[in-house]
Image (cartoon, rainbow, N blue to C red; front, side, top):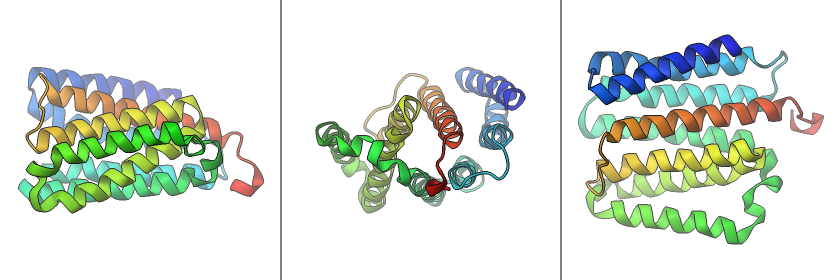
Length: 217
């Protein structure tokens, strides 16, 4: 796992630098390498027979890769919907994978869970006018990402932070896409938070997989 993570860090930093300096071809090539490298790191960092948590996480990373890749070949609204659909499937697979840990998650703490719900409502309301006909899809995705984030907290601190940072990344995408907020070097912030979230989730999964009881295989 260490070798794959080292390569991932190098490619990730190259990607962020390319985003920062506007080197489009380098940014595009490096982005489509990120999720395969992270999946390889998880696979090489776990032992056979790999538990369902690990196998589903690799599939979720595969759909995340589709979300990263589709907009490079399909532009406009179809490309956005393709990206959104791919990441929606990824979030649902993550949620299914982590579901057995729900009793250790923030779902058991309604006051904290209500904060997540409030943030989701704010993001959807801010995006509503710009989303137009896409609003139902945005609502469905918001439910999925916030549910995954809450469930991810069942994997411990790494999962909690990873899920929360994923929400930040996707919120930045929505706020920019629907004309609400665009930060300086917006794409750098989006990708930095996205990659950080995925890495933290994978590390949380790897840690949990090493202590999975038989009932959760």
